[in-house]
Length: 230
Image 1 (cartoon, rainbow, N blue to C red):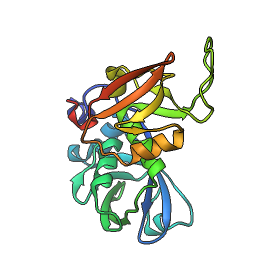
Image 2: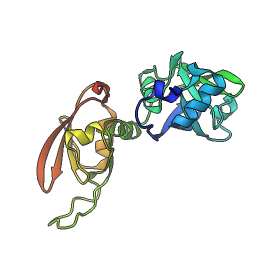
Image 3: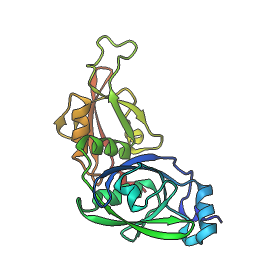
């Protein structure tokens, strides 16, 4: 059995995420993605089966504290504060739960071994956090566009669902592409920015209640918390 099979059953997700971090001082964006099964097998073969997991650092902005601290594209993030990191979703959650403005240790793996990089976390802007929350539930918001056959198109800034991830809690709860969100839990929203900010105030441990407008009619939906999925 391969290292990938031991650590991640099923099809590997090719999720790409952007994390806003502070490394020692100053803001930096670090782009990461999940490892493919082939990459996990190669990593385990090179470093031992105990190392067959992690996330790939795809890009580090040049001349930033992150690059000066030694982070490089191609590094494999394998642990945060000593806790193993198996995929981007877990790393995002660990970062979200870590104290803001505090230093944490991100352990990276290279051909020549491990290195701990000090990372200082900053709070995500609410709209950015809201986009991340939506992605965790499995949907993406954009400004609404007129649909064929609509008597009256939605306002140009209305928050419309433009993508739903297959197998996500959003899909299973019945959310559909083209739905326009009008309430997030008990808060009315009329623009995409308002919806993003409302989502940004939420955690991922509780269900998300949405009221959407579909074909001119309100529809109430409850999306289970992503943490509650098997």
